[in-house]
Length: 116
Image (cartoon, rainbow, N blue to C red):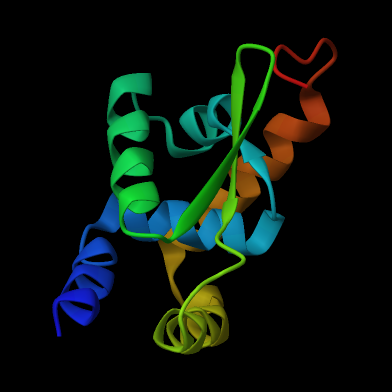
């Protein structure tokens, strides 16, 4: 029961939900991309990413000074089913569409990528 409560609690915050939706749409993202796409301070994004990591929603990979995040490959069945439901409804969420469009524009306009 505790695992289920923690799993659902992780998705109860709009910022964490936005992060999950971006990672689901894009695969692996650098923390700097998430900061720019969400238009939030680094400390806020990092705090939510740490919560998601602690809740087993995301995996991390370090490359130099940059941290990259992906959805966990070892998610429980409940997480996988929740992700499938989110994927089905993401296009109906204006914030998800806006975040994704912002991220695509940022990635297309990077002449000199700072974290890739």
